Length: 439
Image (cartoon, rainbow, N blue to C red; front, side):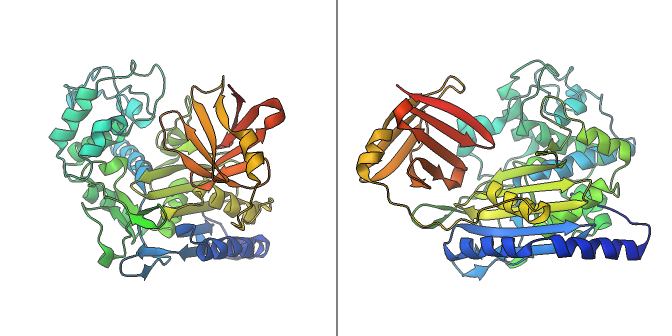
């Protein structure tokens, strides 16, 4: 989810120079240790100027039959599906079938504030419509097929969390409704629209809107979570998320898609500019993933045991996509290694060697910690010379020692740094830091 050079020899020279500077060995080393230590199952693809310059796949798409993952294995990509849906909406706008300022009361009059909510509000998560996947009820029906009427009734019951366009808040409801609107505009099902407007023109052979159950014979993958061993996850019925999370794709296809999108091979420059326009943290189907002076756009996705992330770097014409069907080692770390391999940034390959810390030292960290920055408390306990952490209302987990004062939980990308002399602990996650003090 893109680029053209005027002279073919210039394109070749650019790719050659890139290949010489790209540190593939670093990524190879990471995937080797992840495979050896059984910390990750999934695949990565990296392209520049529309050419794949690195791919790798480890683990299994189906553990029961020992079917190994390959570069062509397809994964449920969760909310990355929203990029496809947003692109389809802008395609429909260009074809005069929709417009950003249409209010949704013509489609869903039963939804609260429908006369005020526009298609544009749905695209950039400013509708105020409650996110149906936030409700505990969701996990009682997510594996069962649902009709449009049933899902609209569920969304309507959730009402609004705030007035339209007053702020932004992520809601899967927005993109499910956009899926239904696209079907009404084109008088076709979502899968057919996706195939006609994006997949065929771009040449994506390993991407489609998924059917209700995983088809291993079509090179799709099951997903897993780890609890002493890999355990197969229940499957969300894909009639529920549709354009909010039902697309299945290989990472290589994802890099082709985002490259074509930014090369304006699917929608025009004006539409792409609107997708990239960020308001209160949300674009219209894109997030600004720029950091450390490097501009990039993309999206991430989670569904069942699958996690994916995709980004495009316009200046470098670089695309990176990572998909996993089971992980202990977090995807952001793999993504950081991919970036460091291109931008020549430092990255430490993990060893996963367990560091033993004396129980009496762990005792000094035990206690309940609170922060003025976020409204949770974290209880730290020493159980048989292992440190456990449990946040308010969440399941506890074992912390792995990285040093005598630094502990981590790789599966959630959590790092805790203790300063017992000050009765302090710093939580680091997602590039942010939060200071906690012991009660």
